[in-house]
Image (tube, rainbow, N blue to C red; front, top):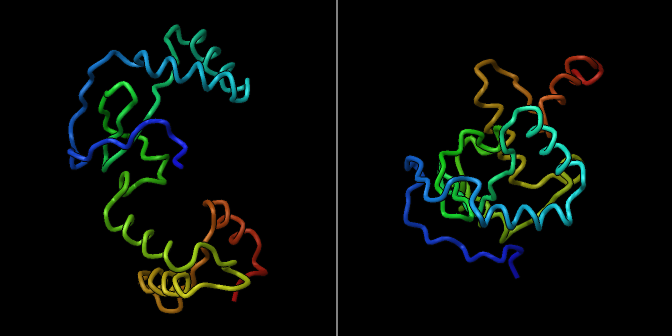
Length: 162
């Protein structure tokens, strides 16, 4: 059972469309869903929105997103936006890119998780080899991490040098 109560959108746009605003954001459906969110979410988030509103003089109620395709996102009020945040870098390839979706589907049929440093999966080994081959100098090594802080740690702590 999906978590969302909303039906999936019909895919008609290629994901590179200009914005199309049908209802002034945030629309009535977004407002209703944010009210639902504030009944269950940490009080800190609602307080942060109110503080931003008071400081800026602008309404900081968020829009509620329902789907995304390529560089576009759709809110539950039917407004289409160009996603300029791209998940703060996590979605640099866009929402639901076909090749990435296919790779995820293929992997989901094989193995959901391997403890990479204890029991690496064949997919991890192939990825590390491909990433190392992209570096122009010979002998490149790869460290898969959760953020750029892993690279900083590596630089600060020379005991990990090979």
